[in-house]
Image (tube, rainbow, N blue to C red; front, top):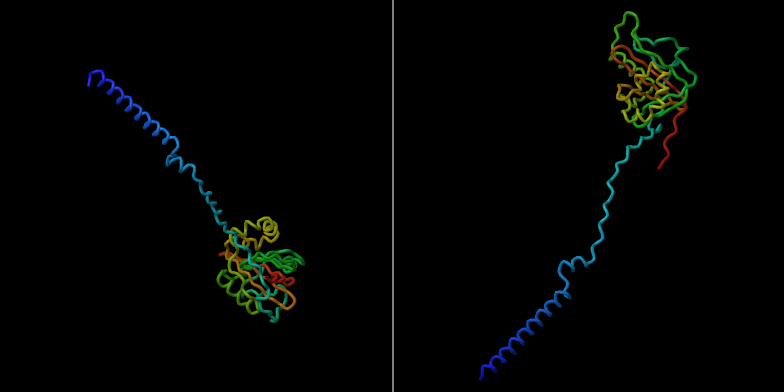
Length: 232
């Protein structure tokens, strides 16, 4: 083979090799263009709808427990003279019967679950030790409890309502406490105030007793029987 012929053959081989590389590169470019990447595939895939978050549970405020007069037994024990309560020996009411009695007033009573307002006749007075008698809170409260129990009274509560009840009823309690200032101490919240009820066939008699280490006070009220709560 002549030098000229060999050079021609080498040129043809190089030309064919260059064409093959161009074809391979084109094929690679085409594959890169048409084949989606994993990231592109993930982006294109439909995404699940976000899960709605349930609203936080709201704890409702405790509802007042309606007082049911039918839970109190009827008493037919003799009541005696108004205001019915006889104090222990050596203790007395302040003022006099006429000045301490209102023929009609609107007053509240804490039943333990409800602040129940009633309309009727009322008696209010301070409780004091008489001349020659040393005041004893324990003695006075014990004597009053025994006297009311003898009349058929039932003890509804031995403490006043909490601060929540007080705040919710402050607008009405303010004028009441101004008018009935002797017993007003029993109508603050969280006080040692006792509420009694004597259920008669035709009426209800309510008694609130409050005492500190110096003296006490009482509120007696009688009026119509409260309506029983509606059956659910």
